[in-house]
Length: 362
Image (cartoon, rainbow, N blue to C red; front, side):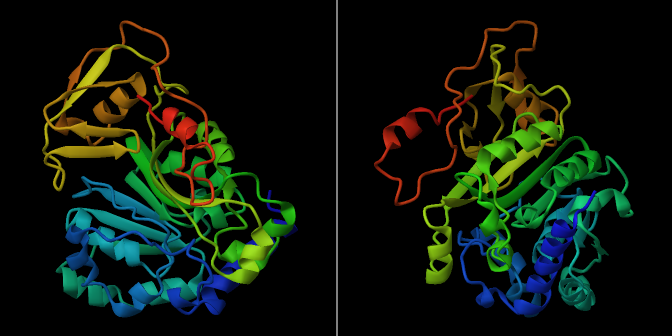
């Protein structure tokens, strides 16, 4: 049930992205703006996207996982459609991309340039829906119909993040994944900052404490969230920096698989995989997540969850698999419980050795 407070936050976010912000240059922090370098392979695809769409981009990460050709993809909080039109080229004419956003002004920009992009690409394979990402069940979207769901710095803006995760779980096919970037805090954000409309609009006020996110993901049916990459965020606006004080924020990309048999811990079953080197752009090494860089042709020991993520998803044809689940050797060594993000400049040196020692995992 939505409260009046939730409605106020939603209205503030809609106003911030519909009226206050006219382009990414209007943002007062780097939280909702991707600072990472765009891979060389994606630059020609970005060059085909309309300049107005590009100017209204507010993402905080790169949410383009491999092996999207022919897939059905959903973008939550698509805004003016930059990622939708980028994904449209990656899925190709046999794939489909659906974008959902609650801000009419942003969707109007995306819709206005639909014909332009169809001419650029040589095919039309995108659709936009107006709606709230907490209420995906209210939209014309068939359950278990998407191979991949992505989102770029939007979940933090939601007032009911568990509902978002549960909605994603419902829409993913078995073996599908939620691959998304968002902003997280190193502790729970105080209520007075959560009520600040500017901080909320800048993707800070609504940021989840990272451990609360892990709990919510598990409750929503994703027992083993995998961190792909992260970066500390600097609050460069003096006024906002004074308000946030010592709170630390990170942009982080996670991948969550809908696989029913996943466990809530990394269990050792004596298994291994061999990467074939057949995924485009990764002939020698596949960076699966922050703790798994899998070398081509080499026997690579994995826990049961990683084994299933590779064997029961679209990644399966690119691997050989060794072992089964007939034996159990206990917890896979090296899986700790400290904050998974790399430290920011102010944290480096305080406990770096301990952080690095606990960061290895299956």
